[in-house]
Image 1 (tube, rainbow, N blue to C red):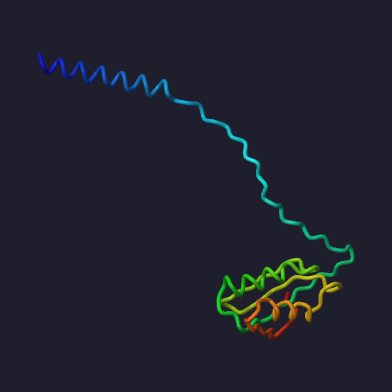
Image 2: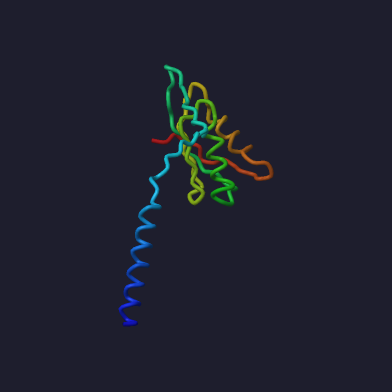
Amino acid sequence: MKLIKNISLALVASLTLFASCKENKKEPEVVTVNNTVAKEKTKVFAENAEFSKAEFTIKGMTCQIGCAATIEKKLAKMEGVKSATVSFDKELAIVEYDKNSVSTEDLTKTVTSAASGDIYTVENMQAAE
């Protein structure tokens, strides 16, 4: 008799929990979030832009994030530069630029003045394929 009573009590408790869980289910709430992330500016180049690639070695870098990434960002932000990639491991930079508005001397100046306190030098400047 006690066993039947316990089974009945467990069954009633299970049904009560099941029913209460089913009733408390809520529909997913839709939330609208105002996304205020600034969009990156697209560079505009002159119609007569003549793109060239320069490849050169950068000496004096001591790390990927503080040195190579900083130099890469500064080169990429230059007016007339289409793209810039700097490899810390290879000590190599490849820059695609409009040769009507940017010179290799401009690229060198940007690299050598990229960070205060660090001394970067540019070597082996050459045209890249």
